[in-house]
Image (cartoon, rainbow, N blue to C red; front, side, top):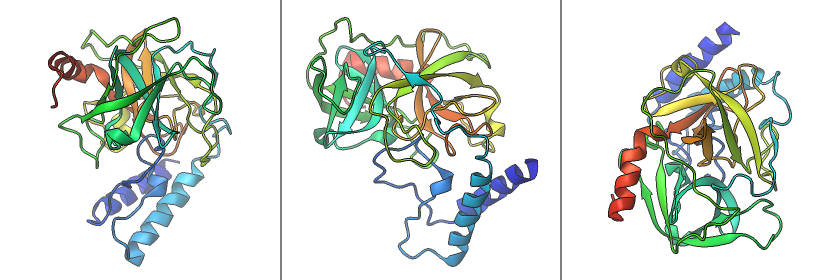
Length: 300
């Protein structure tokens, strides 16, 4: 297995050397944000060499999937409305990303979930996407503020603030998440909860109709899994045995650790793979920016 991992690293370096590589701009329901099993090219006519590298990487990654469970989230349906800060971000009335309510008029999500603000809406007190339950609160978005240091190639600073077009009415089903107050590093092995409506089968494009959640662990020294792609603004979480993870359609959703909103679902290689844990935006690094935006209520 070590040889396979080294080969993946070598192929990644070759892929990085190709100037025509770009992340897809029209991804409707990004898994984490990036799947190296589904590398896409910006060029309309890529060279055969690039195609060969892509297919080789696909085969190697696929060979690591044997231990995956069919339920890649590995969790279960939550009690309806029990995750009171969870938001569904929708485009043309279809869920495509998660979000986290942090203030009466602000939701945090991933920067790679950006769409023109007039085309998206935010739904709170949502449980079953396939039915109207009568308790949902639906909002337009007046501003979508991507962090000024966001890098769409590396997913560094993958965070965005959405200002709702009207204040939320807090109730028994809707309450904000608590931002971190400590700068101390999260300890490896810390148990956290990630939630969303993402897919529940490997390589599926069918979202879960109901909100699900799973407990994952903070994975230390994550840079070794991702060949030093992990920045100080990222944190990894998953299961040492695989089978528990966020996935496609969960992007932008919350990772809650010890009662605090510590992570935003961002990217990863495949899903629920023990060799590639999920990568999350480290929220504690952005608390000052979040508070400044909200307090000044102006664009960044």
